[in-house]
Image (cartoon, rainbow, N blue to C red):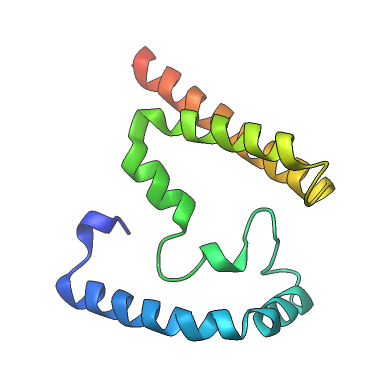
Length: 117
C-alpha cells in the first residue's frame, strides 16, 4: 500500500494507533520479550519492533519519499552504524550496517536497470 493511496478513514485509524503507541512505549520491554520469544517474527536488525507499526514499514516510507536518492540515506546509515559499533551495540550495529549496504546496492542496481531501459 502506498501512503498516497490512504483514505481519510485510514489516516484517522493511523493517528489513533499512534496515540496507542505512547502506551506501547510504557510496555516496550514487555513487547521486546514477547517478540524475542517468537524469533520468526522479530529481528532487531531487519524487523525492529519500533519501526513496524501500521501497514507500511518506516524504511518503505522513506524509500518511497526519497525515490532515486534512497541510496544516499542508506549510505548515511552505513556510516552511522560503522562509526558507533565499538561504542554502542557492537555486532548488532555491524549487522545493521551490512543490511543498509545491501539495501543501497539493491537500490543502485534498480536505478541502473531503469536507466538501461
